[in-house]
Image 1 (cartoon, helix red, strand yellow):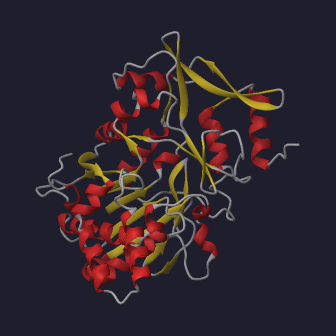
Image 2 (cartoon, rainbow, N blue to C red; image 1 turned 45 degrees about the horizontal axis):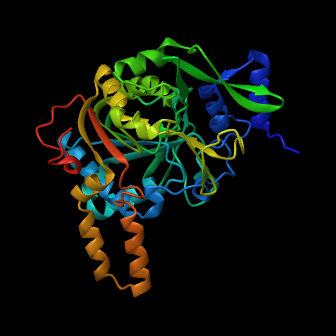
Image 3 (cartoon, rainbow, N blue to C red; image 1 turned 120 degrees about the vertical axis):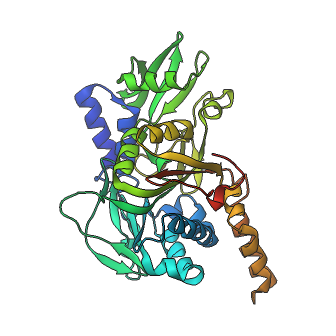
Length: 391
């Protein structure tokens, strides 16, 4: 007999009330419902479900710290340099960046104002660490209370007013792939939307006219030629997100690291069933209708649309690269070479080397994409992470 979770009951209640819901509504509840969605459950440690670059090796944060130092200089060495990490998870990236700044960029560390934000910061449970702000999909940042640990700031503000007039960098690592997506299918040469409903007690899908013209508008803007039966996803949440980021940033950079592709590659013949993937305790699945609230649901990012949305809101693309290229430009090999100078056993040295190599291995995290956008500054120098690669 199937056991019903609070999230499962919430979804079925919405279906009973409305007859059906969009997949974006379904995904929103599964991931972010206060009743026990995947990311809102404090007992749900993300690292037990999947790995990330920051949890693989702290050199990931150290290399980003090098890029942040150059960004600070390009902004004219402002007396306060904000880094707002949205979707900070367990805080691994925040800690490695701040620690690296004190070691390799002490002048930056002295002016660094690092705010780690997350929808439900699981590292609040640890007495040794605090997170920053809760990240909600309806608003950019919802500040809770003020605290400081390891140079990572938590800030209290009135109501849910987001940060404003930020000078620095808004950093997102594996964030946008978890925005709720609308799913579509090409039927009889037309775009149909995938809706979620219930039949015989089981969740099932039906196709119908799109719930919003924005789905067809996005696909049309990409000038795609999609064959009959093609299925895919459209991330409309990126539109509001980009606007929020642009309003928050006064001068500086947006650095987005995620897995995805440019539109022609994303909506390619290799992805005729879309890119939606679920993760549950390191087991990969394509079925979002099982283990509701207990598994991550993610879809690859359309970086073409993300760049265009940025242009619309005054964010200029200044770099786009594979993570492997980005980290190599920032000096990955020097950290790898440094392993040999450390007093480590052969076994520990090899473990460290293997962990570091996952960051640039195309079968691991190396194929992730890194996008840099700017606002309010004129760049006369390429960002180090994107040198000789072009935007």
